[in-house]
Length: 93
Picture (cartoon, rainbow, N blue to C red):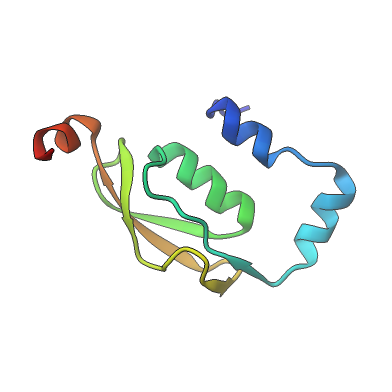
C-alpha cells in the first residue's frame, strides 16, 4: 500500500457497495487540490478516475490546477497541476 496522509486515507476509505456505485458514475467534480502534497493530489485524482499531469516541481505542494474546483468533468480527464516545493513557497512569502 502506498503511504498517504491519514486524513486523506480515511476520507478515501469506503465500503464495497459504495465503490461499485462510484464506478458507475461517468462524471465527477474536480476537487480543490491547492495546498495538497503532489502525492496526495495524485492519489485523490486517481481515486476519482482522473489523471494528473505535473507542471513545475515533481515533489512539493499544489499551487494551481488547470480545471477549477467544482467543475464537472468526464472520468479519465487529465488535470494539470502546478507543483512548487515547500522551500520555494517560503522564499516567495
